[in-house]
Length: 125
Picture 1 (cartoon, rainbow, N blue to C red):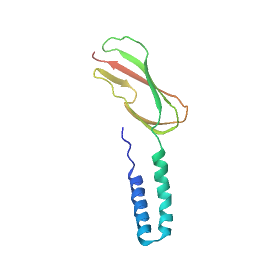
Picture 2 (spheres, rainbow, N blue to C red):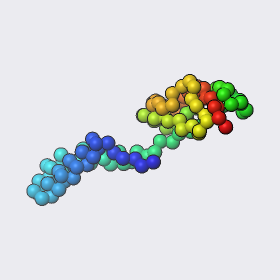
Picture 3 (tube, one colour):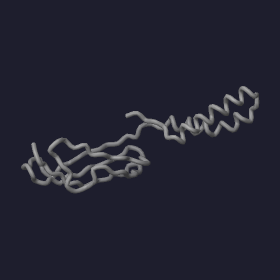
Picture 4 (spheres, one colour):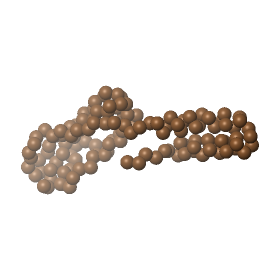
């Protein structure tokens, strides 16, 4: 997964670059002082690492017949706080989601575990 900055962050980068170049060209240290907060935001943003997350999908039964519903639980447990987690269930062919959300977003605090109940139907093996 490639992380990319939002339009706001890209704007901060352009503004900081223009202000720093103008400070050099015009020999005005005030422009460098104006650019400093934007450079600080960029520096802090690049230090943010990938969120660490443990995810497990458990099924209520290990065997089923075609067409039967299976209760499942998706357990999400982050190592550190995750401000915005977007989850998309990519199920194999022949497995349909009967009850629950296929795509959803949530916020998880540090050491907060979230269990999401799901109902799956095995329509074809």
